[in-house]
Length: 78
Image (cartoon, rainbow, N blue to C red; front, side, top):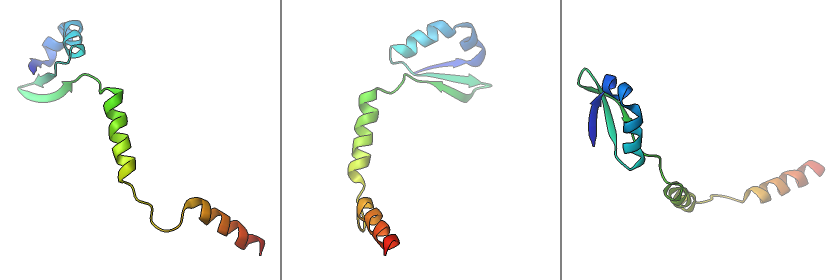
């Protein structure tokens, strides 16, 4: 993890982006306080894997949506 001032980052932005593209994380400091982080983008596979885990964790309570719609339509007709 590389820590660099905002001023230095502005001067060396291209080389910092190359480091981030290689997987390095860069912390930007202003007056010795962290103001931002440059991190590589998440891989699609990780994002989709976590979405799958999220969907698998959801449990349906009550009747299904299709059953609810069918019952509502039936009640409107009668």
